[in-house]
Image (cartoon, rainbow, N blue to C red; front, side):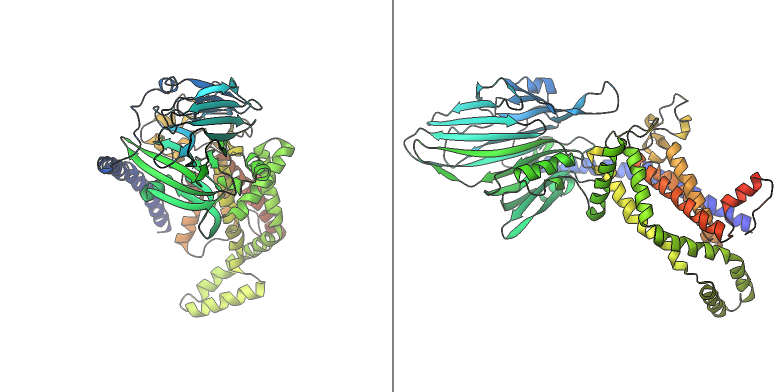
Length: 595
């Protein structure tokens, strides 16, 4: 009967997995495609009803879009690209220090791309005023009057003379990392005063398929802004939520705002004492949605013959924590490192990141840094874990007396519970204590997952051998014998969409083994069905964890090894049956070890 129950349990889990896979491919995916089609239809209807809005040109190649205007080259240690003279936009940037993939011939990461190309992303600056003709706009061609290549210490100056007597001068500077400084001056050569207000905008026209799909990272609008009487705070709007709200406005003093991806950021930084009207806005236009963060500064009156100047900064680059914190201190940008999505458990995430960064600076390998931080965490938890494992070991030693109590009082559950509690008291055992190590590790696990998911320092960070990116899943799979068979599992229909199969490599299997051994060393559950479920848990979690970052599996596996070692020492000292002593006894030809 027990064998049949076990067979039925295994069959149940196998059927459940098949049902889940079948539901994913035959129900969920068609439903998702239908919803996407409905969303496109609604966007088209909204566009037809919109009276005004930005018009996006017909999509052309990036090269064609770039060639539509004369340009000034940008060349810094961190950036390459160009500045568009038509509209004086910063719209063509690549990040020199980052590659798209691990391949040797991989191109650098593209940040900005010109309007007209698919998924355009750019920044623009200017002035606005009521009933003032001739203000420069997106189609205005500026004249380069100083500088040939925009580089650190080599600014570029652009000018535009409007027919109404206004002269606009724009000086663009850049540092050796990712910060641009835009000094805009307006000279009024007319005979009457005029009133203008500065504005700045970061605009994204359409999203690539992978944008906004991450569940553990914020992508979309981000900023530190006040709003009326409310103080400055983090203002977030994910792409999907941003689109639903259409427009959000903030009456802020200083702060910053921008558009962020997982690792990259384009952010506007006004003068920190200036009152601005900031907004996150989405505008449907043709086949794409235009995502726009912008601000308009306080109006200022320019007397005849006078000149006013506005300074705005643009951060366009990688969210390197050290760089963000450096700008925060040097330029007074409030909470700039919050552009990194530290999450709700920031009080765990930040210390873990700081520890990883510090140890990485000593050892030069993020994988080794993860092992070292794991060891430090386990040493900090050692006293509490020691008591818990000792209680669990005593629980396992009481397995036979508890079975005798069940047999003796099988017809009297109340008496059996009373005698069981008395047995716990005599042996000084607390059944609940065994849960504490697991409960304590949950927030640590989540914090590690967050750090590995959102910090660019982990991107493409190698460990050893074939693991060259700790932020990505194990690149090998057991299905092609870890690369020995020339079969691209990821490109195989149906199977290629299941991370549990594509990434079931050595590290997930090692994790599964350590989880099984940890479970085997714990006292068994009182109910036979629960015992079978716990026996299947290591297998189930091996498949679940296969798609997680390799660095997270490295942490969890090493943590399991530490737990196994700690628990084995206690069990061996208390002469409690355990699978390690049983295995060693078999090696010595002694049969099962006796506790």
